[in-house]
Image (cartoon, rainbow, N blue to C red):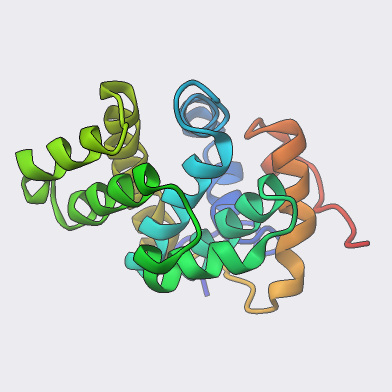
Length: 188
């Protein structure tokens, strides 16, 4: 049960965004800027970073939500998303993304855990300064989102079949106010 009075029909962060539209707008805008860009990192790679960080933070809602969005961008490749969660070093992903996930894993623990060696290794695998910047910022953002969702005990559906339809909507339309103002799409 949520710690504050929210619309319990809205799962996860959606109820919290609906509770506070004034903070929802900049949160949605930042999510769109960081996750819906193909500048450097692809949208799939950005969602994989978000999924991995949320998994490390044990935020069930976020790692399943963003994992499903990554599945949309990866044309249904759920196995890769699961590999990233469980052991990204063995996942069928580019070496550059593995190096960036290493940075994300360190930044998730705390900013000072990211070392010059981590950054140099990522650069040797082809990461740009923008890729590294965005990886650390996505990590920081998802540490905040995960704490927001879990810190307020947002309603978290355990039925994984509820996640794909919303993920498809976000993959198609982005992170606008429709996320918390429109009912969840019907699963097909």
